[in-house]
Image 1 (cartoon, helix red, strand yellow):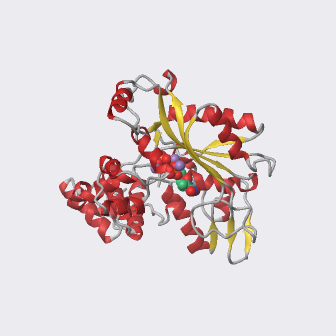
Image 2: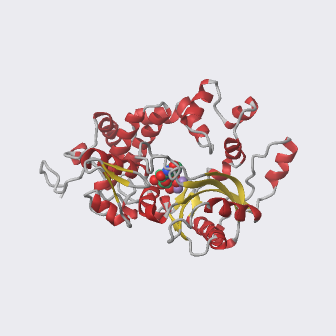
Amino acid sequence: DLQSNTDSPTFAIESYACQRRTPLKHHNASLTEALELLAQNAEFTDNEGRSVAFRRAAAVLKTLPRAVRRLDDLKGLPCLGEHSLRVIKEILEDGVSSEVESTRQSEQYKAMKVLTGIFGVGTKTAERWFREGIRSLADLKTRGGRLNREQQAGLDYYDDLNRPVSKAEAHAIGQIVGEAVRAVLPGAEITLTGGFRRGKEVGHDVDFLITHPEEGKEEGLMPKIVSWLETKGLLLYQKTTRNSYLESKDGPVRPSHNMDRFERCFSIFKLKRTPEVCGTSNQSAGQNDVTEGSDVRQQEVQSEPSDWRAVRVDLVVSPYSQFAFALLGWTGSKLFERELRRWAGQEKSMSLSSHVLYDRAQNRYLRASSEEEIFALLGLEYIPPSQRNA
Ligand code: TTP
Ligand code: MN
Ligand code: MN
Ligand code: MN
């Protein structure tokens, strides 16, 4: 028990997040929120190493069976660097960390938060805009011009896309995607992935993985799904990317980065509000789309509660033979994925991607038809999706 005055904790915490069970709900939310804010700020200032260090520290706190009360409780825990410990110490002593609070209030953090909150705007673009003096959506609109199609959609549906997607909404989207997929390819299978598969109550989008038990049947499926959805007026935006994996000349390419090569579609759905989907509180009544055009038009849109909302949806098509890898890769969390790849590379001399597992020592690809098999090939205990919330 941690209360007793022993020097070593009675349970050991493994150092890779993929070796541990990380539940969604844990006992150290105020500490992890603080560390994750610093992680995000490090991303905003292009310091990836520091960002990952803060995220790993936060992930360790998420695995603890009780709230941290004093620094002593952290003895022997991995991944807690000097900087993270300093922040934790401040919060334990004063309730807040001055560094966290001043970051939260900083002009750069606030502006980057707003700008990267636009679908289609990454850190690089937001940083450039920040250097140009842009601090808000209003600044961006008055600056005028030069937004790509994705960013324009991000701006048009900004409010909706920054409002959490509920489980009920995810379910409703799943019904629609299911109908579309069955219509264009009978026998195809759809799996909900991402945060909702890990048990999250809300998400920033809804992620689906689609496959067909007969290898090859899934080829070219995405354009058919998309045109079915478009015909029904269910898409506000979509960008489909072809599968670039099969096309590479030398056969399967060894994973070099974490973007995978599946046929995929980043989309924005137009989801009808029904009582089942909204529950009792229609929070969005009166919310407007930020429509380009005159003030008069915006006023009109604003005064009418809309009977639909915009929802970000990611669709991915995987060949059946790669399905287990795709499922593992698209279930997340992002840190859990990152740690799996780091474990594979550093501890096992293997390369893991959302397509394959490659054994560098044996110089061959390792097949797997379930997530359980992949964990086993990696020499890891199986961690179910609900415990991958690192
Ligand atoms: P996200 O949808 O970004 O994150 P999430 O579902 O965990 O949380 P939320 O949407 O609620 O914010 O990513 C889901 C998983 O998809 C994540 O583990 C990373 C993976 N992914 C890829 O494998 N390749 C990609 O190109 C992208 C964008 C994501
Ligand atoms: Mn998601
Ligand atoms: Mn997200
Ligand atoms: Mn996603």
